[in-house]
Length: 322
Image 1 (cartoon, rainbow, N blue to C red):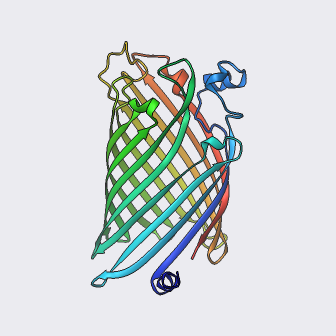
Image 2: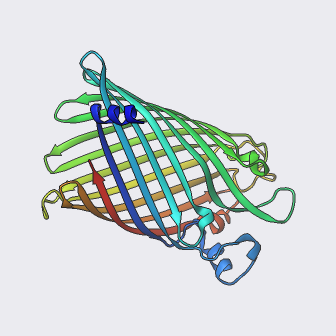
């Protein structure tokens, strides 16, 4: 134990932590139809929850360790724990762990990461073998390789490749899926007070099936602008937008799998975040998030009644860096 403590003191390290307190007005992403059924106790077996909205706490801890194992280049190891705890709907609680290592070589650097999500509850789905509804949960393993290239004028280009494994509980194992992910991220500083990030990611997911077959291809675009507003000093305003276009690729007959055949989803998310310092290493932040999804299918025109949703989240918290 003493040797571990001494090693931690001698090696270059940094710690960051944050805690947010949030309100989410639609934690299960229900459509207007489902929200109406929930509030009027229609098909209550589908909604074994006390509320469709909730308060939650999000806490994150990150540890970075650095040392020069290869010539003059610094190797960085990172470990992140990110957890979510809900006030009323505690069955919705979840956390994930990320571990990785980054190795630079001149103007480029490669990062290898592994993310593990042991359990995530989507909502209650009908049991395929009965008329009862039960928890639809899955675990996830994500392996990623990211390569960064320094550009001129404080810019950075990142290439991303990932392999994702989603493992559902046995009763819903037709949803089990394996996915390939690839992406391109660009980060550049327009000025000392304005930074822009643009990211594109393509994902191809192949589900176990055969019915239902939730295989899909997905295009995702992220835009993020960070502005140093300078009042108070070092305060930062961040404006973000995410566009996600998912195309379901099932070849199962529309008669057998109408909810997925010919279907595509467009999901958009808007973020506004303000962070300002209260102490040299302590920040206060406020964030508002608005998200909506619109589903379309020529085979099943009513799909939007079940899959369209709107939700908003407001949260505030503290961020600490050492």
